[in-house]
Structures are given as structure tokens and as C-alpha cells.
Length: 410
Image (cartoon, rainbow, N blue to C red; front, side):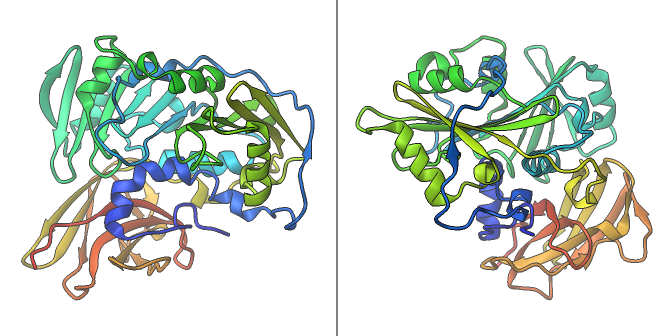
């Protein structure tokens, strides 16, 4: 089985800076890698599939105009409706949920209790029916410190890894240097409050794609979800759930210079054996002007307990580095009490690829929880540039929960 987040591991520094983008491009490389792909040369069947309608793209309110202009790298947006997670589900949903859940710090509210999560290169926005006091109370037991106010939000910040949180009733906006490539808390809040132009109001391609794809249980928009990233202007990847059925939808907007968008999409699915569509009986291809859509009903797993690796915990970590001793101190600040033998650490050289050496994070302990600290010695590993905290059994790559790259003197 392909590890949930290590199928195309790069250097530690690039992983940290591209960690958020990996959510957009790696959603289908996790558990979906466990299911068999059709033999090479087999073509999928095409026909009509009754796919449920999407919800309105209300996530667009959190994207300010020009939000992708500070970098020439590919940008992305992911939108999630966490909700309950019981009964038969698809492998794709299990994989995507695991990555989203893993990256969300615990701030007093569990993942399933949010109505929606919107994540961009600027920030993560959590919305739901909750009191700001719940979040404030949790933050008081962490390394976050009060940092003033902005509009009607209370602000909190910390510097071990640069992170900020803005909270009001029903909304939390957060930024992290390890998850957001160009963190901008204020610009996100301004857009959400209607104080500035929003991206879909100034970019017709983004407006057209989001009008068409709407909102789903899980959704990614950007260059990476595209099947044809070299020719499509923009791509979207959506996962919808309707009763006891699940549906995978791919959408691409093509420029005028590209002919036959529908055939382009078919060729990409067949050539790449796109995992989200691989097990579908029938794929529905539709074309509306320059917009091509592929949709399919995907099979569900049996209604049975899942491996704990696929239910990663939400944890808020604190970290400190002693440059003289080469010691990293990890603090488990917020989250559930866990079995200690499910948490490991890995010291990886900067150029390591697909090499994981799990070591016990809390040796000799049965359980760990909020308030616990542990230390990791890096002094005898000059080739290692950071620490991964991993979740899973010892002899399994499992999932990376947290990464830290200290500033080491030469």
C-alpha cells in the first residue's frame, strides 16, 4: 500500500514549503493506490452517469483578488465539508479526509464538528456553529499568545513555527509558515468580510470553473488537479457523496487554442489511468464550450472499522531547538490522549527520498497527551536537517503528522 503522504517525497525543505500544495496534488495517491488499476490498454466505458448537483461556491468569499500574484508557482484551493464519517465510504474519501485532518491543528473543536474548511496558499478558514470562547480556552493552554485584534477577530500568534490564529464566533482563520506558502491572515479576513475585491470577481476563468464545479464534500481547484496541466487553463477535482453513493468529478477549462476538450480529457484519463476513475464502471464526459467535465460513480468500501493509520489525530505541537546540544524539544500541547506506540519520529537527511526510520517518540510510555514533552537528539546526525513526527505502527511508513526544520549553525 502506498503511504498516505510519502508517495513522491522530496527534500525536507521543499516538503515543508510545498506541504499545502501536496494536499491538492496528492489526494488521489493515498489509499486509492491500494485498489487495482485496469490493465494497460483497457479503455473505460463512457456513458451517462447521474451525478448529484454541487452546492454553491461560497468558499470564494475568502479569496481576495490577486491572491495568486505573489508567486510564480502553482496555486491551489481545497474545500472540505467534514461532517460525519460513518457507514460505507470510498477509498478516495478515506485518503483525502486523512490528509485534511492531519494538517488541521486542534484548537478545541474536532475536525468532524466543522461545517466547512477552506484552505488556500494564504490561510485556512474553519467555519461552523461554535463559540469563540471554546477556541480561546484551548489557546490559553498552548504556546499561542494574544496578539491584538483585527476587525471583529481576536488574534493569537506564536514564533516557534510562525503561526497565527484569528477567531470570532463561528469562524477561525489561521496561517502557518509550514502549510501556507504566502501566509496572509488580514487579506483573507478582508475578503471574507467583503472589504476587498474577491478573486472570482476579477478572474473570469476562475469564476467560470467555480460556477461549474460549485462545492462538494471535498474539492481541489488549481493547476495541480488538472489532468492536462500543460494545456488546461485551470482544473478542479471534486468528490461528492449522496446517500450510499460517491462520485468523482474532474473539470478543466481549456483555452481557445485547444481543440476538442472532451477528447483531451478522455486521452488523459486513459493514458494516465487516473486513480480516482480507475474502478468506475462508466465515465460521463461532458463539454460546455471550453469547459470539459468527467464524472463517475466510485465504489464504496465495506462498512467495517478502518485501520487507525487512516484516522490521524489533530494535534497542536510546540517545538524548541537548542543549537548548542542539537536537541529538539517537542511539546504535545492540544489534542486527544493517544497510545504512545502510535507516535514515532524520523530524522531524515535533506536529500532522502522514500527512506523512513521510525524511532519511538515517547519510549517507555503507554499513553501521551496534552502537556507531555519529549526530546530528539540531532547532534549525532549531521546529515539530518529536520524531524518528522509520524503516526502508525513501527514497521509501517504510516503518515507524517508534523515536520520541523531547525536553523542549525554551520
